[in-house]
Length: 153
Length: 192
Image (cartoon, rainbow over all chains, first blue to last red; front, side, top):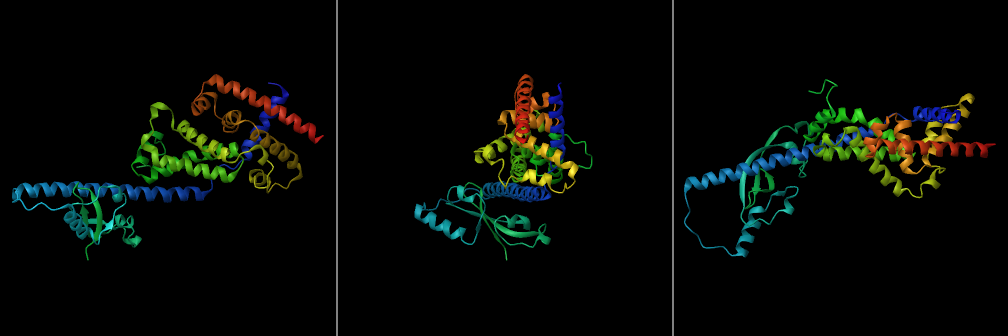
């Protein structure tokens, strides 16, 4: 190694030690805020999926238990839409529910859920009580997937 | 669960994918310095380094589940992501070389601030001049200088981080240092 190279490496060493050593603290704060937001969303989605599966299983069990119902007159598409609109009224739509097919026949299941989950769909909540549970009704579509939720008064 | 600092990156990334906050904090604190310094030395701008650091770890939060340790270490995985974000930022900042003397190029200013001893002035000028020379290198040469000379990686680690052969790192570093010496000599001649 010649003198020029030695001088260059010394200079690079000085440049390296002069640079700030780490990102400012607010970068970590922002990342943690985002991490918490995504974790909440993930938990809420998992919970909603579990609720949907549970509700579908319960419905199937009830239908098997009561046996086949007598056939009723077939509803027209207009009747079905009107019925669905009437049923879905008052429910707050869940994130991603818009991407699901429209509700043709619905079922409402009453459940207990953590208040933190309500925050994700726009309910203002008291953060001190985020871990409390509240009673709510979940609207399930014909495919068993949750479309909306409303609080039970 | 994370009181022991001996958790591997694999474990931490697996926990992060499950929403484990302490794992994310530990992973961030372990790697943020390398990511930040790489972005800072590559761009010369603290705001880009901060933005890139944030974007890199935001990406980690989103795709931690997809990390596969068989394809390389977490450090090289992070360098790969960081490199992409830095190169994207540099593309946006084009023409980059003309921006080296801009007033908003605050890295040099922040480094110089607070050093009011006359004896350090010359050294600071040399460091500043070298910093500009590094920033004026083509990105392919700049990144090997940043990794090997400024972030003290060995050739094998740099090769893994950049996804190329060790021989490529060695030859690029050799060429980059030659270019830097040329620039420094030219700068000295101008100063005289």
